[in-house]
Amino acid sequence: MKTTRFEIRERVGQYRARMQAKGFRQINLWVPDTRQPGFAGECRRQSRLAAKADRREGILGQLDPIAAETEGWTR
Image 1 (cartoon, rainbow, N blue to C red):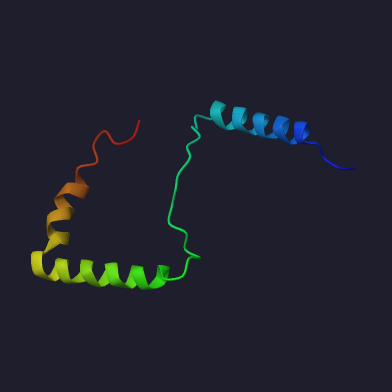
Image 2 (cartoon, rainbow, N blue to C red; image 1 turned 120 degrees about the vertical axis):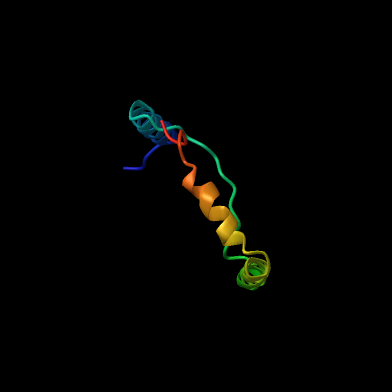
């Protein structure tokens, strides 16, 4: 038996209602497409730049105190 669009829409609606009742909120999020040609190369390029910047400016040392300030980030 083939599932109709209405049945699928109904199931999705029920799932969303259950998740919302559990305290979740649906969001849409755009992320880089890791399948695109050149993605791995761009990751390497950016990683090298970040590594150079860290050595040059000690960025991780600056971020540690900031990362420790998580008071109030969650409910």
